[in-house]
Image 1 (tube, rainbow, N blue to C red):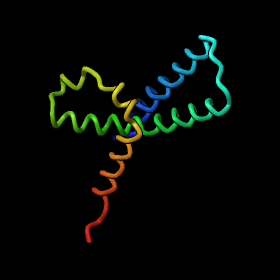
Image 2: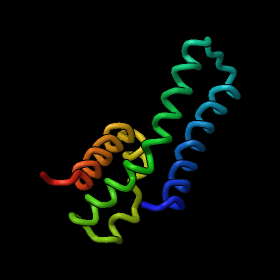
Image 3: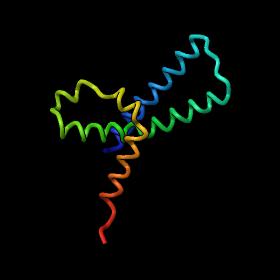
Image 4: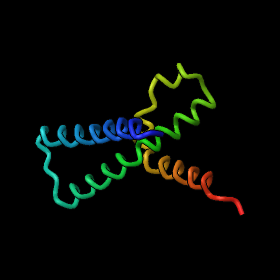
Length: 101
């Protein structure tokens, strides 16, 4: 995964949460400070891990399916599972880079 890939999918995720927030505000919704703080933390954490989740989902799906099938889009699944999948991706990378004794 390179910086361009990370920036692209980070932007997608951030835009997704900005749109949700704006749709809520336009519809006249009010958020108290605790809910707004929680929403901001969740959106930032998910935006950080979303590129890792996409990378992991892409790697798994390429082993199981064809490239044409992957292009149908799994972005919503990746947004929903971005934190757990991102953490799995990091653990796999850390295990690969750990020197053997």
